[in-house]
Length: 287
Image (cartoon, rainbow, N blue to C red; front, side, top):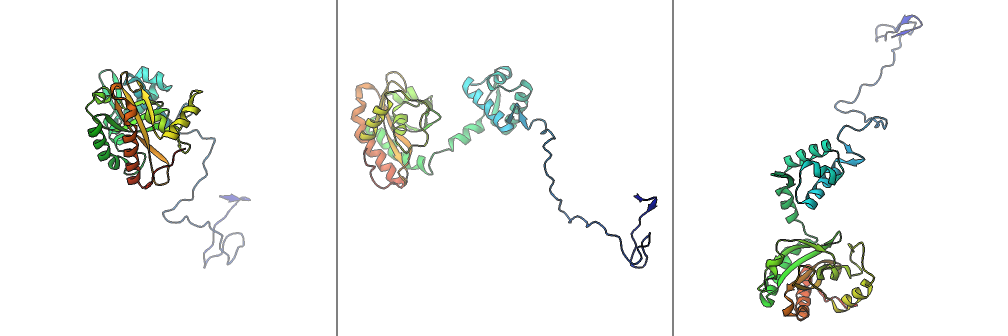
């Protein structure tokens, strides 16, 4: 470094500095702290690394778009998944390879499908701690007593999702066991949607719903006919946590000849017993 044609050199204790700075040491910059670096502010003008976002979406969003597309198509090739997800083919291929490495996606004869890792993770999900273990035995007893197929269901994203089944003797379970999702307006979905406290109401409801919802709240049960599958009816009652919030529904599915209304009382009593074990401890008042 030069200044005014002369060089600047710091003096030591025994040697004066240049340019007459006798007895004074030139100021030195403090050394950086060992092992630590001062954080730098991000430069917003620098583009994000390739692959950080995909067409305005994050990598995580893109991965879930692909998984959703696989669910919708029940497995497909790269071109179709790219189209369904709205991702460029190269981006879709890169994300699929990463998902395969994680076990979330598997290759199949016709392309890609959801992997076993997603199945394992999904089977461990429940909307309330201990719900599945608490409801299992009462649901089995209800199925044994009534002969109906008994299930535990939740309402999410306009769909009734069945978490667990207890098979009965009416044949309804055979017709239903290969599915786990139905429209929200099953008996289980309706009894949950009717609750004022429910946190996941359906996004669209028919004009008649306020009247039907009021009737469900008054009776404590909901009934459907032919929604789960043609020839099968079901009746459902809500399961509550300790705060009185509905967390799931108990439902019994049977053939129309068994008159689902006759199951209403036993389904309601079983749901009350399960709710008590979940911490509710008292019967929910009607209305």
